Length: 567
Ligand code: NOJ
Image (cartoon, rainbow, N blue to C red; front, side):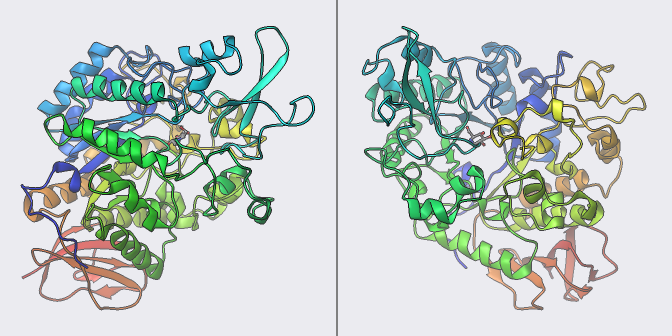
């Protein structure tokens, strides 16, 4: 398959960057309060440089009541005090650049926090006022207006509308929140909202950020008149959780509306008015995959997450199909594909690929699988192979913190410590996403400290989300000294990718081989083989560059991936 792309050196960095996602709250705590922070990130720049990533993406770092851990922003032009100051952020951006690392920050334009000054003003103002018009307020249905304005459901569970008490104490209008109650949706038909976000982008671009990750990039505009989801569509999904329903391919009057594209054309002009290939990447859960191409047309965004691999089973035919779909979806617009096996919203790939989970499900069990069936060793082999495969494919790759340590999902967080709004909003049926957000184990220590915090005595239980006491052997420190650890394997892979092969953009061709072996070649006599079946003998004349697990001579065992160069 070919992607018609400019030669390396000429093309912008984001076409084939390896970007490391930092979930700031759980990455590194510099001041001993059990919460990750900006200085914590700065203290790990050396680690990230040694790992060999091109960029970091930092999840929302703005002031926020943390109802959805920063995805509920109360001020877009400042830093959450728990995470540091604006000066800390400016210094981090500068020093990241000194380490050769670009900085992408999260921007959350679909909704604000209910504590944002705009929303507080809207609550105090009258129906029909300019303050309310920044959000989506409507009268309720029924004789007393006590029924929600339409049948939309919130992604995290329950109705997508919340009724407010008016300043005079009477029950009043309803406002839309596609996510948590504390995340009111903004009205993007209002020019004031549009102009505010222009200013937010410029504020951060002026401070040197290289790009933005756009949260819910497919959701900002709603269908005119806010029509009901048609009953026939809804009934098909009855009995499924809101999360499954909202992400299902059925037409939704709030996702993927035409209006978003006008905004992205506007943002592209802003990005292009700055030097240095500034970019934006869309988080757009749209379906079918071909719809993604519309977000990355030449005058819109540069990149969009390709979520195909978050729902894949570990099956060769499915993997091949998803790779083909992903590449061909974007070929028409010439945009690069990106590969994502992990992020802060999904069960970690070690568990997913072993248990055959697709991230859909209504309960903890259906989404996270049966832990008694989990074979961590096999899941680890698969997760490593998956990442090596992603890094060998054309385009860019997003790695999620802890992926380089092959951390598994944490399933033993006590219920009274769960923080994801999904837990409560699902009626306590789905424990939510906390299990992939547990603080990073940097060190191994006999007293149970885990090096997440600069305060050595901080125990795993004292972190904002309890870390796992059994994680010692996964720590970055213990993996540092094992040449075959995941950490050292990925370091080698990233170095080979960058320095020797220049992988990333460019053509790929399938290699015709055994059905249960996925194999493809890339420029520079380079090939990648991933074995899903019995032992496989690699071609005699090739040199092994990196392998995800031990090889026996030229034999590739099951669940193992290898990068080779033919001589
Ligand atoms: C997508 C983010 O990745 C997720 O963590 C968040 O809860 C929702 N958007 C709502 O902002």
